[in-house]
Image (cartoon, rainbow over all chains, first blue to last red; front, side):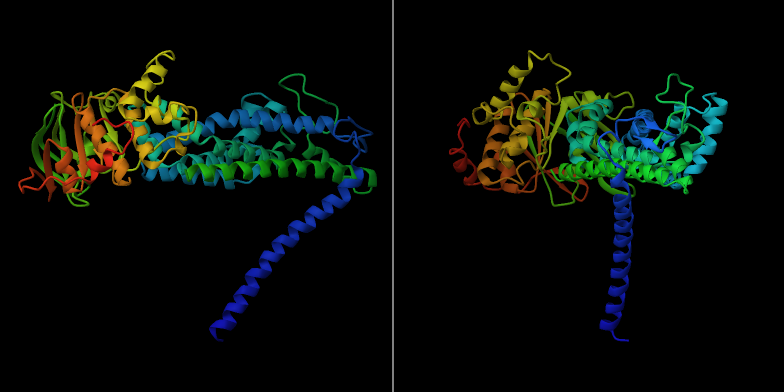
Length: 282
Length: 245
């Protein structure tokens, strides 16, 4: 086989797998779109669900998802930021720094159901938060921690060294450099990390299914010990009623809204990521 | 003002300078010349401990600033860097306004009321005031390379250092900007001790009160007599608006 033939085969293979990925994404999106759009109506986003999810909208499920996502990010962000600043500004390059980085990647690759199991044991049982939105938020916070950590670290590390040197040369202390240079100059990277973390939290089902959510009986949590309805649980429960076309249709509608939310967050993250690149090129 | 005593510096096993003992007189300009990689910049950066972040950087001996060894453990390195300012080869301005750049190092140290006066004072010192006084709120990145270098000098002067370290500050500038910086530095020597690193012999001779050569890890006074440069800088300078004769 000559070189040109080999190149053609390789090209056909890599082109084929690229096309396959694009086709898969297109299939998922188009199916969701075709099946979800007919369910959408003016009040779908703002009405309470009725008849065990077979009618009405998904207002409280959306609120529940937003509560879990928002609280998770609020809890996770300071921890991620603190650990990034410790790694980038205080730790010298060495084995410990590499170890911490690898640890983050391992945490990122941990199956999410394990976060649910261990998280429930730690928070729900030992800290006695039970099956509640607090437990769910804490578990999601731990789960999105590596995503936030990696995004923020990349943003801080992309910051040109000249800014740090300029700050040092002016006699700024390390905390002042962090406050005046590192944080403002990495701002868009941090926003990107937060949005990606939110997107991951929005897509998560397994870890919060049995630790934080409920299908019915609760609208908005009235105390720290209340669970919340979420889009993910709503879709899962409705999808299990495969014999009922109304339930399945509502599940598609909720799925489309959830996907729209994740897409919106990812798109915003991508836009902010572009700003990070521009900053680092200044 | 500044004295190196039996001073050696190395990156890991690679010695940069060895057993140096020499002084830099106060309120004068000392030029340090040498080939690329001879250790000029390393030596310069040891004076404000900018090499501290480098993992395998090590020193021996003492570096005295105002009679105090700056490498003793109890040294306040931040105070040292405010006392010994450094200007880098390439100007680095923050993507902020001209005003914010000038005040960057003293923002928490002087009151908000004092800030405009401080900004005007140092921008006048670097002959930049007339060029930017009407656009202090504009981004500093809109300034030319030469203006940016004068701005970084103003930013350093705002911190009121006693010593100014200049690491080839004109190497990325055009002749007109180079002349402006050279004349500017001459005007500062009455109030500052200046160490200027360059690889241009002619420039060193024209601006400095003493010229030192760094070669094979050793520093020695320049022995070879050299003619003063005819001009270029001075002639060009006369065209630079705002620069005093």
